[in-house]
Every structure is written in structure tokens, then in C-alpha cells.
Image (tube, rainbow, N blue to C red; front, side, top):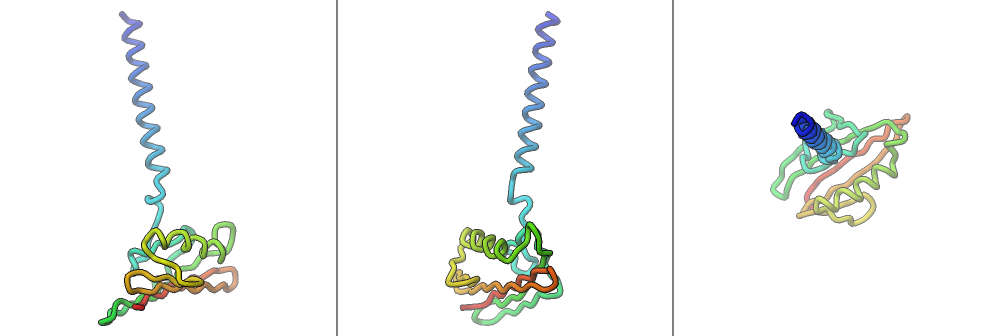
Length: 133
């Protein structure tokens, strides 16, 4: 009788441990939980390693549509390079409905998004301009 109770106890322990580990992996593997977006253009993702420059935000609303300017920068290194920024947005923006029309220029629903990348003293800055077509 005691042996059967001990076996049930170990079985329940294994189930609880499995559920705990499963929850841990689900919470830590979800890429959306680490993705951030710009404060002014809430549907524009910010690449990990870039930091939004709050003072760079410019916003206008016109009869033809919205106009936004924002910039983000990051230190050049293993995670941040001009090539990696271009590749990140080339892979990410089509998933959000943007279609490329040339080097770092995207169109979606009557709007144009343009990326300009500059490097100065080891800091990469990406400028984003969103305006009506």
C-alpha cells in the first residue's frame, strides 16, 4: 500500500515538473515578448539592439495622411551593423504588409516608409520617415 502511494506521489511530481518546464520554455521562447515598437509609429518594430531617440520624433497629420520622423541608434558591433539593420527590416516589414520598392523604401496602404542609415564614431543611427505616397 505504501509503495503504491509513493509511486503515485512520484508520478504527480513528474507531471508537475513537466508542466513547470513546459511553461518556462513557452514563456522564454516566444519572440513577440521581446519585440518592441516605436512610441510614435506603433506598428513599426524596433530591431533589438537599437534604442529610440525620443528627441528625434516629429509628427504631423495632413489631409493626405500622416507624417512621422523618428530615429534609433545602437553601438556598432556583433549585433548591430548596417547590413543587419537592412536585413532585419527587409524580413520584418513584408510581414506587416509593407512591400519594397527599392533600396530601403517601402509602401503600404498609401504610405511610404523610408530608412536612412548613418554611422558616426561607432554609433549607427537609423532614420525612419513615414509619409503619404
